[in-house]
Image (tube, rainbow, N blue to C red; front, side, top):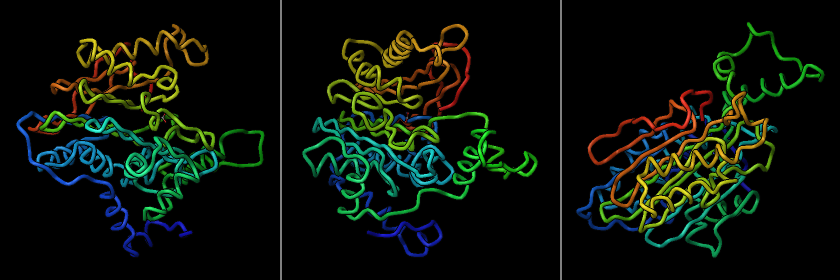
Length: 354
Ligand code: GLY
């Protein structure tokens, strides 16, 4: 098995190029460009994602392939600590990635969960969809599958993420044998980070010029999670869902809320029933609020003390987003420009960032 390597040797050894090359594994041949109006939506960290995906759709790329290439920018970005390389590790300091894809024209999907050492888990998820009779591979099996298909192994834990994780571990308890440095000696990356225990993720849904849909959700999941914890992102119906006759939806935020409510499936079914995208997304927020009965997960007014955001595009190109708490935005490209737009919200106060 290949030894994981750090970014310096990764770059010098040309592994970065190999990571990029494996992104193309399983991509469909380009086809003619149709007459329909394409739309790409993503979470707010996906401005470059929607731009890349739209560029590809406009030269005939499959919508799922376009979305995978779009989110790969964020998967490879060490400064996005919620996805891929540089993602926050689990409580043992190991980065474990979750990702899933769905492909409208073939009504198919694939996913990987708790995958270590692979920079582009969404591309591996596409191969699970195409080259196995399964929908989800996890952990060691997912890693072996990725190795088998030539994905290079990379140490996903950057120095910044390691320092942040170490500080989290050193400050967990004042009853143990670990001593954090005094506050005035904290590394600036640690100082900047703390305050919020977040989750993070990127979702992207793409509608091409033929009215075909593809979507992807990819994440390093909840910061400092219990090893093996899997969120909603690799679960078809929870962290993403599409039906090529109806629309596509996906989510960021507290994954457990979407696992308990199959939120993305709900949104697509609400679209099928005739709801507008933003209303369908708001309905999923209401469902989470209605079923969030654990007092530990409620504020003093019984509202969720976490956030979840939904992103949705309908087959006709209409799109919308909604979150539990106000302040969320989504990235959109409708063929003219990439921009951030406001999401609707159930509650008028932003308390968390996902
Ligand atoms: N929504 C990302 C996660 O909970 O892992």
